[in-house]
Image 1 (cartoon, rainbow, N blue to C red):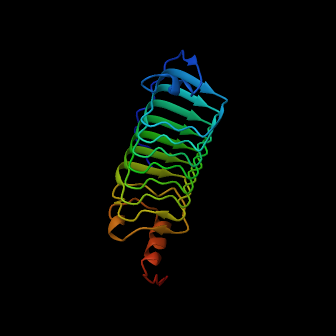
Image 2: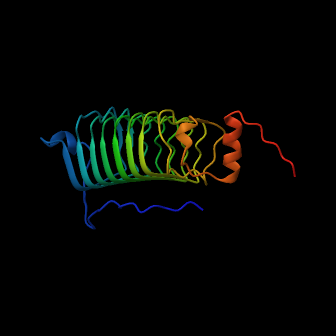
Image 3: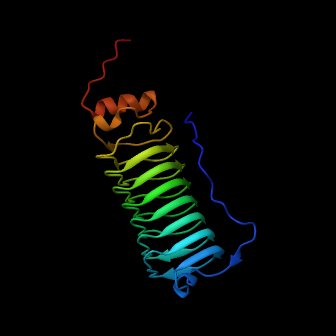
Length: 217
């Protein structure tokens, strides 16, 4: 069984004022603090260097969200649709995504720390050249996700679908894949050194690397 790492959880106040995400536009600093947003559907939301801290976001859909260099600290997303959103070069710290649709989301170049993705659809997502520290993917689908050139420290994939993920130029040393599933991965032999896999996965990797498995039993 994969050991679940310790991740600092988002720190939210028990009392949050209700507001709209459009408050980010109205604030001179494009900052939203200690708030709750729920049940919105938004088209074409675009804002650079927005700041959200101690915010609970539930049941919202944002079409074509463009939030480059966003700063998210102590934020929880529950049952949200952020498909194809751009959070490139964002600072994402103590954030939880739960039951969210994140298909095609772009985290390229982002710094992601103490973040949990739980029961999310993250297929075809972009994490290119991102830095991930203390990040846990739990029961999520990451089919076709791109982790090219990432820096990992304490990253786990638990009971998730990793089919066709691109790990080229990314070291998987210390990364736990043992409880997840995949039909194929794009990864180099050198990158696999120190990666934690199950016995069945080890046989699969050997075949991917062109080894012929002989059973003498």
